[in-house]
Length: 75
Ligand SMILES: [Zn+2]
Image 1 (cartoon, helix red, strand yellow):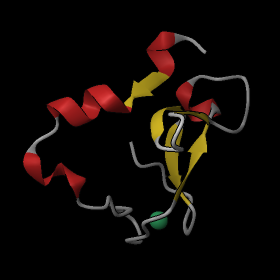
Image 2 (cartoon, rainbow, N blue to C red; image 1 turned 60 degrees about the horizontal axis):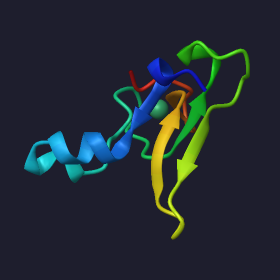
Image 3 (cartoon, rainbow, N blue to C red; image 1 turned 90 degrees about the vertical axis):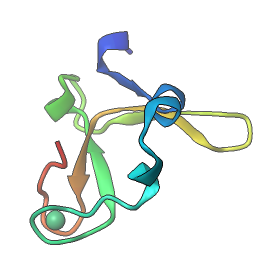
Image 4 (tube, rainbow, N blue to C red; image 1 turned 135 degrees about the vertical axis):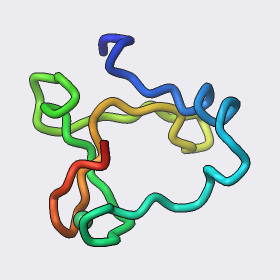
């Protein structure tokens, strides 16, 4: 996976403002569940991907979050 397309969540969490842990809501419909759209992030594949820690925590992802309710991209 090209580094430029990967969101490193550990780095994001270290640099995030204190109120950034609230759930993100889709700006179109208010939905809270997102799929990762790989093509919107520049991948050749339709689906994005995640990296995981040994305990199952998501530590990074590649893809643009896409609302499962209405399909709007979160970025
Ligand atoms: Zn939506």
